[in-house]
Image 1 (tube, helix red, strand yellow):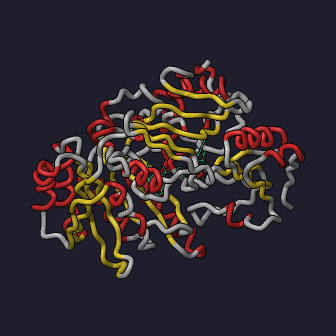
Image 2 (image 1 turned 180 degrees about the horizontal axis):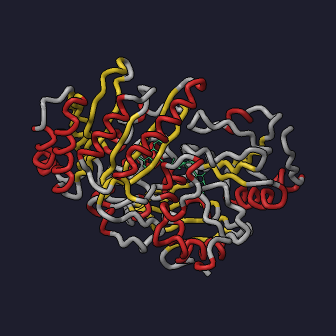
Length: 458
Ligand SMILES: Cc1cc2nc3c(=O)[nH]c(=O)nc-3n(C[C@H](O)[C@H](O)[C@H](O)COP(=O)(O)OP(=O)(O)OC[C@H]3O[C@@H](n4cnc5c(N)ncnc54)[C@H](O)[C@@H]3O)c2cc1C
C-alpha cells in the first residue's frame, strides 16, 4: 500500500505548484524519468513553481516522509530523482532563464534543460559548457561536475558556475558563491545533491555562437589506427578542440560495428580547418560530416541515440592511458554486446578542465587523461538482466586499464558505496561540509556523503 503524506490546508493553499498523490491524474507521468528502468512510487510529488514551494516541500518531507528525492531534469541514470514511498521534490516547472550580455552571465532555474539554456544564451551569441544531449537537466549535471563540448577551452560546467541558490535541510534559502557560504559553494561544485535543493544557478558565459563540429565514422576493423589517430590528435589539440571517441553498433544492422570521433571546435573558423585536418585525413571514413553549425545544434546531434524511456544501466571509469590493450578489451566487449543501442565512449580530460587544482572544487578528477563511459541501453524489460550483466562484465574486463576514479553523474544506483573513487582527496572536507549543512542526512537519496562517516573527517 502507498504511504500517505498529509499537507496542511494553509500550506496547500499557498503552494503555487501541484501536490500529486498516487490517486491523482498525472501521477504516473510525473514519477517517470528518462531511464525507463526506474519504476518507483513516491507517496507524494511536490511539483514546485517557486522557491517558497521548494522550502515548503523540504519542510513537509522532513516532518513526514521516509525519504526525500530531488528531481531536476530527470536524466540521472541511477534514478535517485524518484523515491519509493517518500516525497519527490520535482523542480521541472521551474523554467526561469535570464541572460545578461553585459556581464556575460546566464541565470537559470533548476528545471531548465540544456536545450533551453543553450538556445537562450545563443540568442546573445553566448554559451557555456553543458551536456551533449539537449534534454539533460542543468541541475543534476552541474552539481556532479558537467562534461561537454566546451570543456577543453572553458573547463567543466562547475568551472563556469558563479553562484547557486539553495534551500537547505532546515528550510532556509541561502546563496553560495566565492564570497557567500564559500565552503558550501566549494562542495556544490562536484558534491552532487548532498547539501540541499539547488533552486537556481548562475553561469559565466562565453562568446561562442558558430562552432565547427560533427562526426567521422570508421569501421571497427580500423579501431586501433583510429585510436592512434585519436591519441595523437587529442594530445596535441588546442583547447578549442574537444573530440570524443565512441564505439557502437549500427542499430539497423547490429553486426556492423563502428568507431567514431565526434568533434567540436569553438575557435576561429580558419584555425578550425587546420586543427581538424588530422581527423579528416585519417581515412577513408564510412561517413564524415563536420561543418559549421550553431552551438545549440551541436548539442542535439547525439539526442536520437538516447530516447526517453529506454532502459539504461551505465558504468563510469577513467582510463589510465589509451592503450591498445584497453581498446582491444573495448572492441571485444562491443562484439559481445546484446543490444545495438549500447556502446562505449571516451571523453578527454585535457586543456582547461585539467588545469584546475583537484582541491579547488569538490570535483577531484583533474589529472590529464580520459573518462570512459560504458552505456548499456535496451528497450525490452525481458532483456534487462543480460544487458546489466554486459555492462558489469565489461567494467570488470577493463579493470586492469582503469584508474580508481569514477564520475558521479554516470553511475548506476548500485555503485553508491564508492565515495573515495568519486571524491578522492576531497572526501573528508565534503563530509565536514555535509555535517554543517545537512547533519541529519535529510538529502541522502543521492550518491551519498554520510555525515557520520570516518572519524578522520572530524
Ligand atoms: C542521455 C544522457 C546524456 C548525458 N550527457 C551528459 C553530458 O554530456 N555530460 C555530463 O556531464 N553528464 C551527462 N549525463 C549525465 C548527467 O549529468 C546526469 O544524468 C545528471 O544527473 C542529470 O541531471 P538531471 O537534473 O537531468 O537529473 P536528475 O535525475 O533530475 O537528478 C540527478 C540527481 O541530481 C540531484 N539533483 C538534481 N537536481 C537537483 C537540485 N536542483 N538540487 C539538489 N540536487 C539535485 C539529485 O540527487 C538527483 O537524484 C547524461 C545523462 C543522460 C541520461
